Length: 165
Image 1 (spheres, rainbow, N blue to C red):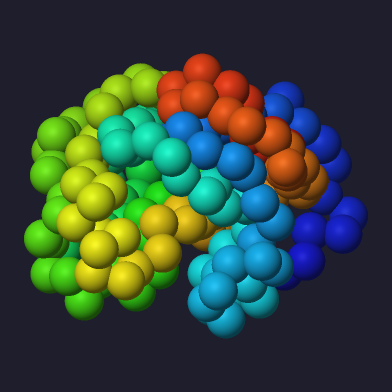
Image 2: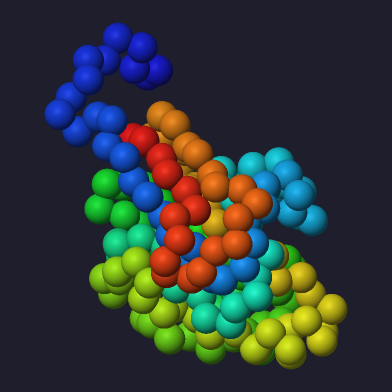
């Protein structure tokens, strides 16, 4: 159950790297103004205080889910890691307004593939934060996760998270 005595297999210790899904400054999850993210109830990672308007895939994988409200999407990597990119805080209540879906669920994506375009002025004008959590949601398979905090990052280019399976 806990795999305390499990021997390392050839698949163990695989490292994965995630790039920024949106341009902005990385912040620690504890600074996200939402308890679910700040207390890592949905997974571990970081958040980005966004300045960009196009949200891209942070890694190669399958776009497994785009929420109907387009405020979040999930990607499953070939190594089994599951990612969640949640655009803004409480933006689900916009019911998709201010979000344009650019990729379909079920498609293979590469790091940097555009997934969602946001209307920053509209969303901010409605009083919502665009702080965007980027999470690994199935932490039970992760041995080690490191987040690159307090860095200015460019979507699809700069590494923000590394983790080991």
